[in-house]
Length: 188
Image (tube, rainbow, N blue to C red; front, side):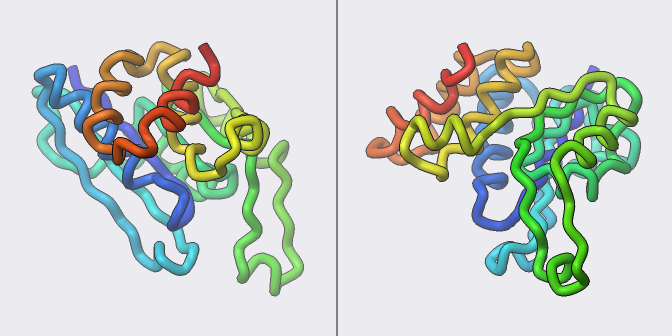
């Protein structure tokens, strides 16, 4: 049985690294992995979506609409923008953070986290909202929100912490490993 995972956020938030860590963890556990990113204007704060499919019956790296088992969202509005990937059995790990896009700001529109979370709850079986800003503030770095979210996913039983930690150790520069490990373990 395969697992299909969508990881979404804004360029620069660490979504691609999170996808690589999940993929590496699965590979190290002997599982078949297919992955792809749709990056677009990521360098300018544009949307980034990574697809990770794990398991022998995964034949395409792209998660079909309505086919995600898990969504890890680094920003609440991006989670809603990708809501079409969710199925009624999906589990969503989402940052409470809402980043107003330039186009929304110019149009005078604003988004609130509670509206975004409500929309997600109407489409998924479980939504876990994480205050990444608070945790990252305690750790002293906003750059580890990706590992905070992966740690929350581990706490929910979506991934094994030891597998994710081993993959992170392999992929993250040694100078930053300890900080990232603290972020990964922030909810244990």
